[in-house]
Amino acid sequence: MKIYDFTIYNLMERNASIYADKTAWIESETDKKITFAEYKQKSTILAAELKKAGLKKGDRIGIIGKNSLEFFLLYGAAAALGAIILPINWRLSADEICFNFTDCEPKFIFADNEYHGLIDSIKDKLGFVKEYFSLNEASVGYPSIEELLKNINPDFIPEQVAGEDGFLIIHTAAVHGRPRGALLSHGNILAGNINYASVLHLTSADVHLNFLPLFHIGGLSMAYAGFHAGATNINMAKFEAEKAVDIIQKNKVSFAFDFSPILSSIIETAEKSNKDITCLKAVAGLDTPETIEKYQKLTGGSFYSLYGQTETSCLATFGKYNEKPGSAGKTVPLAEVKIVDDQDNALGINQVGEIAVKGPVVFKGYWNLPEDNEFTFRAGMHHTGDKGRFDEEGFLWYAGRKAEKELIKPGGENVYPAEVEKVILQHPNVEKTVVFGVPDPKWKEGVKAVCKLKEGRSLDKNQLIKFVGERIASYKKPQYVEFINDMPLNKDGSPDREKVKKIYG
Image 1 (cartoon, rainbow, N blue to C red):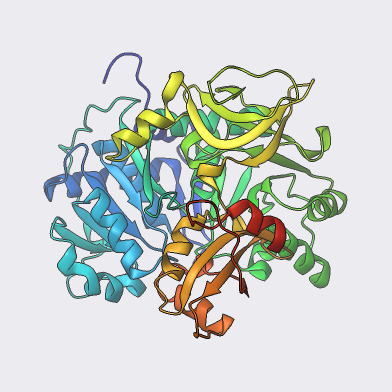
Image 2 (tube, rainbow, N blue to C red):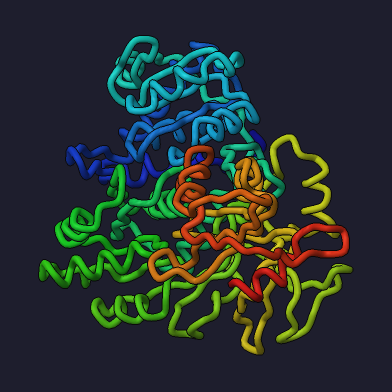
């Protein structure tokens, strides 16, 4: 480690010193608590055991499981070793999970008991994995983290890790029919923490309710922002509105991250049960104006709008909704954001172009995809594939996606049409299809498929939805299906996407 480096493990050491006996983490299911000092101690013990088992700096650790203390301890252990965490979205299909593992070849895999059967079904394709472990109870072939934590190695010395070293790989949606692993460094996570803290004014007196999954940049980055500030993280294995409202009231939760329809369900539950959630003073994320305004009126708190990606450590712009309703806030402290044209010339006020970002929030690149990285990082900036404009006061206004990066975001998840279309076209009755996003009252944006069937064939929309849901993650399947007789085409015979969206959107 160089004299100017600062890593996640350095943060753990700092917090173990200045917040030693303060509660860092609470498991809502069991009320089990751990202090900042204990978190560093247990993470270090776990790191020592993994090193003894053969894990080296740069090796990947695969994780598939619900939010838990053990999940978060693995992040700490990886920080001490210079290993890279590979968290898997448990909503994916077995084939998708296998692809993500195969893409990054983790040496060890940790899984909740409920996923041991799934892992067993694909083990023959995971020859690179040396050891399997359980995140909770041990089972045959899956020793538990609890067993590892019983051992103490007083001679363990943390690895020499730099701030720019890789810490985390999160697979983004399949832009070209395959997911891409976005590699984030220690420095990326720390920069994200500072951006959150500076805008939300986080302190050690705050309490964060962590109900977004730790495989998602939103959930992970907000949990780490709270950790960095010395705040307490209260963990939910999975979001349940009634339980969340009880936790908010009981523990005086002060901030959280939101994707529609989470906040609306919290508000509705609080109103029905007459529970007090006025302690929830800050909510960041994406939601409808109606929900945002209802939350602010009910609690007196502030909603914070944002623009960002996994590739920008979650945030690029951020700010209070009330400052400019409809905007995505202003550029965060540790980033530079520009609007550029197709020749990478900076555009002026209120001119729409591609959103490009540089600074310590920008990720290290896509795992093993040098050509994608060269294209993404051209002209010395990360090109997001999204469009926007800055107004006279420096607020960013989102303006959709570029054609090559069309994206649908149901409930905060990323769904690329190309991936869904690829699966739909596997159905023997479908000749052509176009998939795109449409407004949805619950998820904010829904997935719609417009399909032309092969001559003489028939198909029920529910059959097609089931067909897709059996092959990729359930949240990627269409909520809306429309069959048409004539598909608008381009000169090359491919579907005219813009025309289809205009007619059937």
